Length: 178
Image: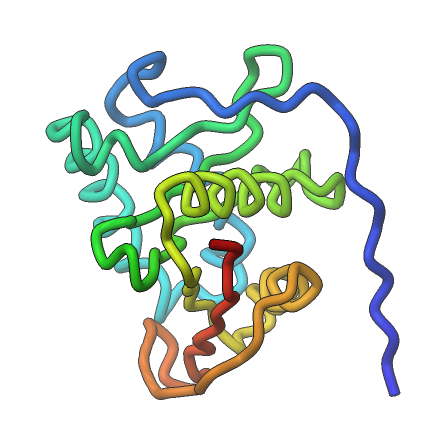
């Protein structure tokens, strides 16, 4: 049995800033930098994802009152450390956690967890009853799965999909207070 150590959260003053404080291209840059190791070690199946990240950036800035409103950049003393996004449109039945990434130099401090907690708070305020997220069983994404489970998410299914066909996607969900 392997026991995973869950580190306590860093209590640094993390803020969640709207994308209106940033320029087009900065979201894609944060995602690129967050996934640099993935692209270095497994370029074949993942390289084509870059265009999706750029499209995510374009859509967020082109539609600031819809898509862009559901993206925030996490900052430590005004310096970006990561970003997260969500989709409340299926609500009130459920909301979907989208991108959730932290720059490599800021990992291990609980910032990804704090981003998810921020999204869960937004879902709860919007009377959304269930949070859903999809991650991968790919080794790069295993810490994300561990984090979601530590936050009380439970796995509901695995299915084929994603850029690397050797690994399944893992769907998780968590009930929220009413």
